[in-house]
Image (cartoon, rainbow, N blue to C red; front, side, top):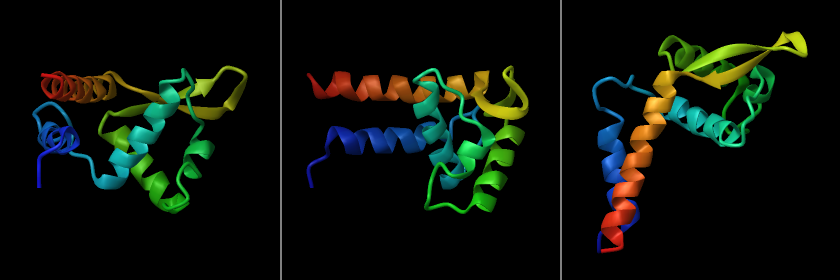
Amino acid sequence: MKTSAYMRFLSLARMASTLPGLPALDPVEERLLNQFASFWGNDYRPTVLEALIIDEGISRRTVQRRIDGLRHKGMIRYETDPADLRVKRIAPTELAEKYFSRYDQLLNSVVRNSST
């Protein structure tokens, strides 16, 4: 099978997820983090309650445990909603920004190499 740009990206992404300075994420944590990023990219911080139903394929209890794991690993933090102090919103940390920056660099590298 011919190697495509997507296959090269997946290979690089697998390597990037194990680079020093980034915590190891299990597949569910990675999936949730990517789903949070789709909100963050639109300048929206999902609430914890929204996160619990973000993916119908993952039970609420599993999501809660993985959110706790992401917080413990320093990838996300809670922000109090100024309009309702009872509401907690999920925000990225500097470490999450570093994580996505690495993937952005990889994607740009694959795109550059594919166009040559």
